[in-house]
Length: 392
Image 1: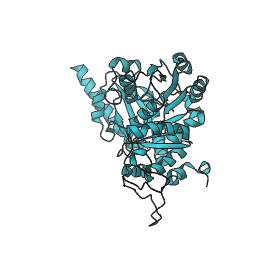
Image 2: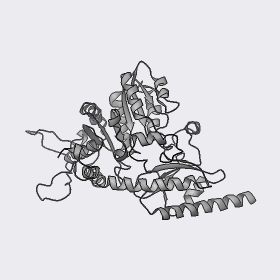
Image 3: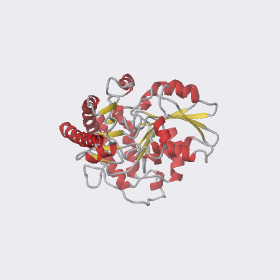
Image 4: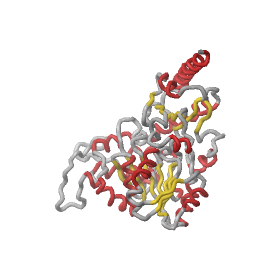
């Protein structure tokens, strides 16, 4: 059956699985060999070449989900990002980069691109005119992330794609927050899609991986760089990622359902100054989210009201876990200023709207009542402390 006619759950469950011809097991076998036959074979397999059986087959699942011709699995999201950027950019080239991007990606660009003599410009905003104003004669790429980390801002995929094509530039997107379940950038003309598979694709907070999907031609270019940088993933972890992706649709839909309800709850809470979630009607990009996404995701951020200590709030939580990463089935919460964007200067964070009281929430699959109860008791705890401090 054609993959184009399969439903998302079927793709997640079956596309890219390896048939166990020997024992007829119902799940893919793991091929842990790091050495394969090289004579009289169609494919010379080697782990660093991203073409072991488990690597090759899981890539088919990612490609199918992202409506791409081909894909590759990497050792981390940053391995996927760095390999992709270096595959297409060389000394003398220029790249336009969205202002609001993952802190690790921004640090990679600011810390190393000057050494490679690759020119770059960060946009001042996320409107297409902001990107257009940054273009140069040597612009080869526009790099975006939507929804963005951590403020959940959106970029118009169609508009960016058209702008890039009109200026002979390629487009690359970090699609981690949306997942292929809620957004397929290639359908809007974007060239290359990147995922930190550590997040939703893995979904259980127990692996580190990355993924890239695009045309076969683009993937050949990326592979040519990847085999030299060596950012491949062990086959056991590849197998774990395939296992996890079988429930991707179920997990994302359950997490998103929780997030929409919780965002509305927080938006009405007197202890919350502001909520950043595209599913809220007062979010500036709500209409754009309805246009290019099939849902609003399970990530949100919020500012605690003035006078409340964000660190104390995190410490007071009993169910929701303060944690560096995101997208597991368990709810996790963190301070971008202390984790994802800690490599930026305070001035850079302030320019992006990331204050010390900004909290990012990766919503899990727990009972909403339990999550709300945990938030309420934590707010009560920090509010009492703030009141005692004021009175003293």
